[in-house]
Amino acid sequence: MASSVTSTTNSCHLGSSFLGELSALRITGTPVARIGFLRRIVECKESRIGKRPIEVPSNVTITMEGQDLRVKGPLGELSRTYPREVKIEKEASGILRVYKAMETRRANQMHGLFRTLTDNMVVGVSKGFEKRLLLVGVGYRAMLEGKNLVLNLGFSHPVRMPIPDGIQVKVEDNTRIIVSGYDKCAIGDFAASVRLWRPPEPYKGKGVRYADEVVRRKEGKAGKKK
Ligand SMILES: *[C@@H]1O[C@H](CO)[C@@H](O)[C@H](O)[C@H]1NC(C)=O
Image (tube, rainbow, N blue to C red; front, side):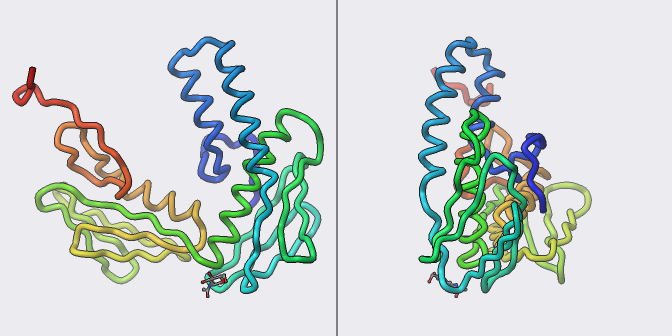
């Protein structure tokens, strides 16, 4: 899977928190000077992250070919093509480092970002990731049927979601869904697509939410307090 810097539509594949922060700022109409200021802070932080070495456990094999990196571990295998702004090097001690290949602002941004993405790959194939979802609402239930996750979310028919290869789904007490696997990005995508059937509504918080999600409750008209 090649990563392209231009495809900002899916931040998951870029793993970019700072791009999201910047666009949020633009939407809220923060003055340009302030954005520039924040951007500088964010970049400093990002390149500090970029410098941190990535420890590769002994159960993970790294293969490099030009700008392509393959990471293989007990849980799976992932690969990524790096943009020319960054370089990746494996040290004899088994540590991976991401370097900037040029001194541009974009390279500064790529540096932290691709260090994070690389770390996610190594952690993913050795320890794995999981994302938990909760169904909140009377009669809302989840169950597994073969390779499908079946959801009763108050629609006239149950929702049937095929579970993609490389992803494991567990259901506890019919209301807790645990999505796990080695590809953080694929886990996030699948969990997000489950949540999208019934995002938590702001009045009673009914719906599908991430276990760590804070649902901002709005006061209903009837229950409004002074
Ligand atoms: C791979 O090695 C790491 C570090 O020693 C360990 O935490 C992890 O559990 C191992 N993974 C598997 C699936 O054994």
